[in-house]
Length: 117
Image (cartoon, rainbow, N blue to C red; front, side):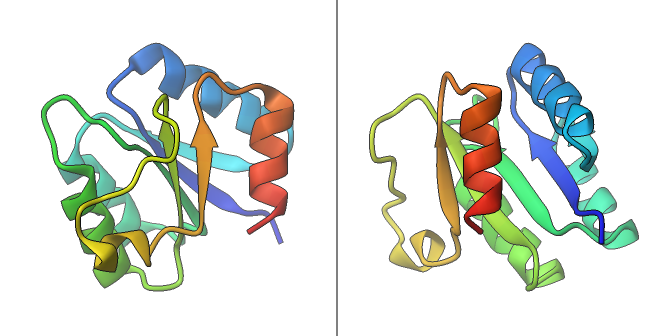
């Protein structure tokens, strides 16, 4: 079964590049420009994997992760970040995360993370 992936990153170039890479390797992907779009896509589609930027400029990624898991408990969460070993101050959020994707990442990095969840 084809996996559906939702990407949310405040860097539009990273988000669009990730979207293109995912489609090139056979995934169905969606992008969201803000949290209301994230929630709308989650409510209206089966999303298997959610890739979210750890350090969003105008929104709280931890709050978004909790909301997404509340709407779709089966959705796997991948956090992308340029930080080494990013963690949230709330362990409840850390426990919701399946894997991390270190920026900058390559197609091979993306494939590896997706294959391991």
